[in-house]
Image (spheres, helix red, strand yellow):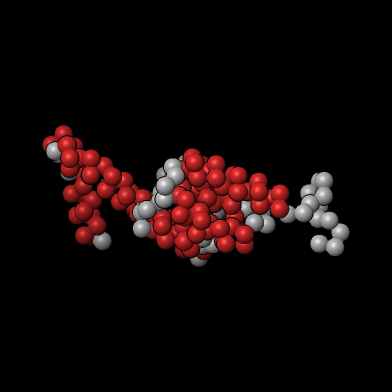
Length: 169
């Protein structure tokens, strides 16, 4: 971890005004990839922390409450982080793309709703498609794709008015 502290200190010491133009453009994209990969690491740690329910050890009511207190985060941020952490358990291709920094937290947050309701297995089979699409879409576009996918997935499920299953299903 000392190496990590040294690297963070080195990055914090960069003066953008002193960086040549060509190098600055590369640094902007390289550091963004680093931020995404660091977010992915934090979310993986959070997923394991949540799975083990370690937040319960010191009396917190929930993982979200623990995060608000210990990491000084606000409610929407904790909800998003936990949603993403839990979704990644079921989306290995998306998880790998996020882990390597090729897609962002916001991409995964856009994909996560695909797992809701009874769509889990269908979403797991679509995982490689979601991860590949996220490589060339921005998070807003990815969210639109997932919302469309959800509408299509729900329309494929035979339902009666009111949401009940037809007889014999």
